[in-house]
Image (cartoon, rainbow, N blue to C red; front, side, top):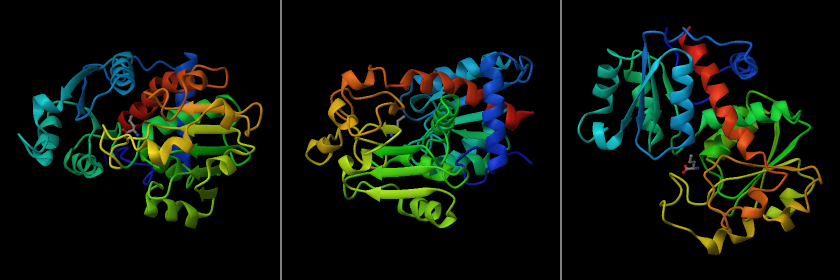
Length: 301
Ligand code: NVA
């Protein structure tokens, strides 16, 4: 039976462990799988803009021997020109895999339900599993993945925050979310992660309290899909949550800074911190390629 990566909910700790291990061997060059997708194509169905996700998937597909076909919303008209169900069924006749970046999570769920080939979530308003896999791999490489690492997510409790919570159901982590009231992570995802009881999870409103003794400070843009309109800034609410050098002084001296990029410099993070020596944002971006090749290999072999 085909499998999808829509969120982590149907993925076990063992499956995800295999993704990390495959990702490491792709990165080191120990594994190549240049023929895995030979003679096969993958459709990239994107309703939103993308740089890292599109390029890392296209490069990954080519490196696995396949052919990527980029399909933008303007060209295919998801749910306007044609129903999600019909698009998924038609694409399944031509391609071995669908990578989908959709505005609404439900669109990605529907694509996966209707397609007879695997569907990979490349960002929805609810979760961003590929990003969090790359982030987790980055932390593993730095020896900072696990319960003894205090990861503080500062700002808008969005799709990135939700995916961290989903991962915390599979691996023991210590997560603190410092979010303004009304911008907390998704309540059901939060509750489920807390009920699983594997990780230590705390939700606070005060970024100063949260960042104290942090090993990792993670932030993301304030306007986020599903939470605010793209143009909306809400500086009144979010300014205290800006990741600055001053805020980082409260964390451990060796604290690292993460951001999935693109960043709005001078909003959720200062340019100085983003470019500073504590920042690992380029390592995160680089690891997208390796973990996504691992996910595609896991789903297609
Ligand atoms: N949280 C951001 C992620 C973009 C890759 C958003 O949803 O807009």
